[in-house]
Image (cartoon, rainbow, N blue to C red; front, side, top):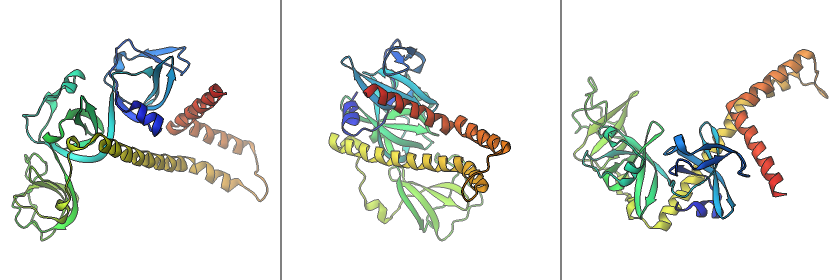
Length: 319
């Protein structure tokens, strides 16, 4: 797997993978590898995140997590690393796209590809020297596509004169016409797909689409380089930049959630606090215990407790 050691040893970053190992590969509960809790089996081809690693007996074991929590430790050799990039809305040019081997290996059904739909390109993989973008729909991983088969939107976010546009539509496949939408002098253009020559715009509280034969804006002067044209070092730099940015944003969200979740407890303490002490009545003690249990059993609370236990056990193992 490309960059596993680079990412862990040099930059200490978590990263995403598509699990692709032998189905009988064991998954262990702890890094001691003394208790098998599962095998790759039903988890094969799943999308997971690696948050830690250890070198054991000449092999590298990785700690896998999912949205539901920690999965366990397992050895990875054939799984696919997903690199981070800028999140971009994309449209597939047409139905005559290349069926890449990786889609077949992972049993991804390309019959469900909808060229009338907008997908989100959130990452890329490098296989045999080739770069493929990872497409998502509604936060779920879908397929791998050659960058040259995708039209990447260019952000505009500006009010523009669209007097040359005759018709507006409710979808990017131009299947449903937007009735009773009048062409105003200035309309808010969100983004532009340069190859297909279509724009997405916001009108009142609705998203609309339109075809434009001629479209000019200063932001179109900025050249967008295809990932397939970039060197390995530049691809690595892109991944690092967006990995740090994503981790920073996730940390902000967790902090905000923890603050909100603990707000009721802080308010209760503040309301019951006197100058030098707290009045601990039976009712107060009961309220504190209830609030504590609510925090402890919440999703964030469970994650935090599991993380503390993991760190504590790791510190003990290093003594």
